[in-house]
Amino acid sequence: MATKKASKSAKSQDSSAMWKWVYVAGVVVAGVTAAIGFENLILSWVLLLAGLVVGFLYFDSADVQNFGLRYLILGTVAAASGAFLGVTGMVGGYVSGFLGGFFNFLGPVVLAQIIMYFWNKYFGDM
Image 1: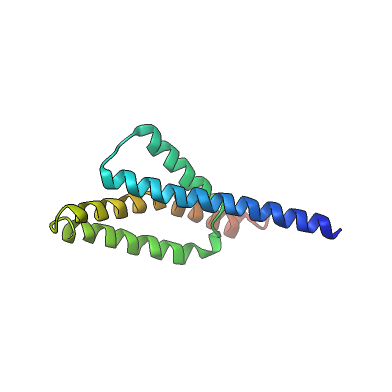
Image 2: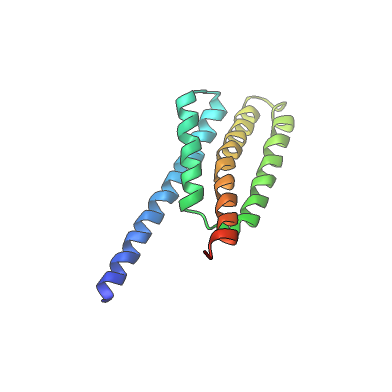
């Protein structure tokens, strides 16, 4: 019996590790493409779907308040960096672009967490 539990735990950890790397890759790709000003419709859809899947499967919906607060703080920093770092030269534009891309990638993640939070709260006991 212990091998079945260990096997389930190992599969769960492998899945969790995979979604963690999808999240990290999405953050990096969204940030770098926004920093260099690259725009592609297909890449935008892939990042949107990756954010939704990561929000549904990787993050805990019970932590939506803290994650949402971090999301709002990042949005404020991204907006402020565009105003303050944009005038400091070339590097400031890249930093503000990266933060803006990071913020845009987290939008679907937070949306998925909110959906899961309300689903678990109101329909989870059925």
